[in-house]
Structures are given as structure tokens and as C-alpha cells.
Image (cartoon, rainbow, N blue to C red; front, side):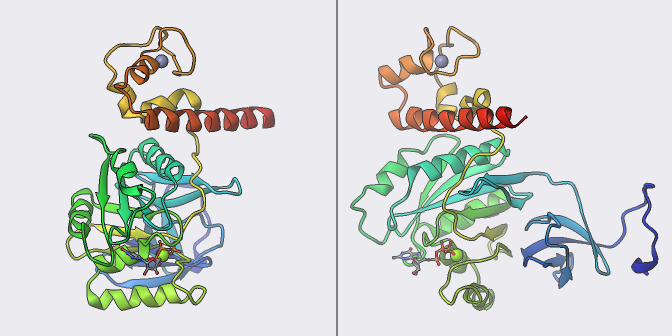
Amino acid sequence: MAKHRRPTTMQRAPQGRPGTVVEHLGVAVEVETEGGERRRVRVARNSGLVVGDVVLVDGERVEASARRTELRRRTAGGAVHVVAANLDALCVVAAVDPPAKAGLVDRAVVAARAAGIRPVVVVNKSDLPDPEGVIPSMRARGEDSLVVLVVSAHSGEGVDRLAALIAEVGRAVLVGPSGVGKSSLLNRLLPEAARSTSELSAARGAGVHTTTTSTLWRLPAGGELVDTPGVREYGLVDVPPEDLAAYFPAFAAVPEPCRFRDCRHEDEPGCAVRAALADGRLPEHRYLAYRTLLDEAKLLERKASSRS
Ligand SMILES: Nc1nc2c(ncn2[C@@H]2O[C@H](COP(=O)(O)OP(=O)(O)OP(=O)(O)O)[C@@H](O)[C@H]2O)c(=O)[nH]1
Ligand SMILES: [Mg+2]
Ligand SMILES: [Zn+2]
């Protein structure tokens, strides 16, 4: 029936069964419809659908709905990649070994805030020795609007707190470099039956357990979790330099205003943020993270304006 419908530009009532994209397989998507039934539907490679998209499935036709939230990142190669749709929280996973790259964690936290979703830092492999001091360095990043959970997928430490947090927020995604234990954490949170499937789908990849596609799972304790392939970089998308400071809540906590309303807290006179840094009220790592990202945002802005 769908085949014979003529294309039309007129408004028509949306048709089909509502569902959620739970896996993207290049030329097909796996859709879970409301009853929990799963269907694989072929789509164009550039369909633009991502895990978490709400769709209507009508035969072989998939129609996407508007997204509530959209998490994007710039890849190491400079392309813009939509990580997942309709998320409530971003869990950036760092590990004791391989030791966390603070820059990637800071970028992911800002990306979450810019996308209107809650950032969470998950430090995994707490069962291992921590010679580089990853755990204290990540704990120091905690603030009112940023929970830092120290966990171990192997020993189970902190995993209940992660499960409770996901149940509370709704839908969360695990992002981070390869090998930090994202899939191991997911497996720890899943019941036995679902676990074997996720291990199988992981093994479909390169033989090792490197995750190659993003997948969405419903957790028994409540909430949903998206596992994603490891990333090398987490570049910001569409965060203009003048907006960046708003994603550093520690700056907003400085009670005095800067002399200039549009102060970027670089070397402007009368900068209250730098004053707070100088007298130790603002942690240096927050300010340094801001300056690194500010330089990056300025560079992107220059590139964009030289293209237009
Ligand atoms: N000691 C220890 N090892 C862990 C822990 N969690 C994961 N690992 C190990 O770390 C390695 C990588 O784990 P994965 O879960 O595949 O990592 P990942 O983040 O999903 O990696 P990608 O799919 O490549 O992005 C595996 O050998 C795991 O056994 C942990 O809590 N403690
Ligand atoms: Mg994985
Ligand atoms: Zn300032």
C-alpha cells in the first residue's frame, strides 16, 4: 500500500506504528515498537536517523519525529556526528587505566550542557591502582550540577548509584574513549538474558569486544542506556566563544560581576572570574579547561567566517 502512495507536499496525518530506534546498522535501523517488539527496517545510508529517535514505521517507510534533545560532537576528522537523540543525561566514562584525558571529559561535559542534557562523570576501574591520580582529579571536577561517580564494572562498586541515577533521569548515554569499560558497565547493569545478546553484538565487530554501533537498552531498575563506540576526540559543535562561559557554573558562582558585561575572562580589566582565580576561590583546572575550549571555539569561528 505504501508503495502506491503518491508523494505529496500537502499536510497529511502521520501514519504507522510509533517506535524508537534502538540500533543503527548503516543501511538499516532496528526499531522497538511500543509493545516491545523489534523490527529491522531498511533505510538510506544518509537517513540521518540515530539511536533514540522516535519514529513512525509504516511498512518499509520510517518517518522521524522532532527531537527533544540532540547530542552532537565533532570527530577527530572535523565532521559533525549526532551521537544520539532524546537523551536526558550524558555519562562521560573515564578510566583509571587507560588514564582519563581530562580535556575529553571537560569537552563532553560542556557538550551536554550546551545540548540541554545533564552531564555525569563516571570514573571506571576503581578496582585498579591509580598511580596517575585520575580519581582525585575527576572528583575535584564535581560541583552542584556535576555528579562524579567512581565505579568498577568488575567489582560492582558504585554501579548501584549509576543505576539509580539512570532510573531517575530517564535516558542516558555512555560516551568516552575505547577501552574505558562502557560496554562492561552496560553489561553489569543488564539482566543475564539481555547480557548475552549485548556481548554477541559486541563480538560481531572486530573479534575483540570493541563496540561498533550504538545500541539502546532498557534497564531493569528503570531508565534506558545507550552504549556507543569509543571516541578519540570530543570536539564541540556550535558553541560560540561568547556562550562558552555559561557552561562553566563555577564562574556563575563568583558573586561579583565583571566590569564588562561581555567579558570573556581572558585579560580584560576588572574581570571578577580572574580575581576569583587569583585568590583561590575558583579552581585552576576549571579556568584552564575554559581557556582551552575558548581557544578552540575561537578557531572554529574563524574557520567558519573564512569559509563564508
Ligand atoms: N580492571 C577492570 N577492568 C575493566 C573494568 N571495566 C572494564 N574493564 C576491562 O576493560 C576492557 C575494555 O572494556 P570495554 O567494556 O570493552 O570498553 P569500552 O569502553 O566498551 O570500549 P569500546 O567499545 O572499544 O569503546 C576490557 O578488557 C574489560 O574487561 C573494571 O571495572 N575494572
Ligand atoms: Mg564498548
Ligand atoms: Zn570576566
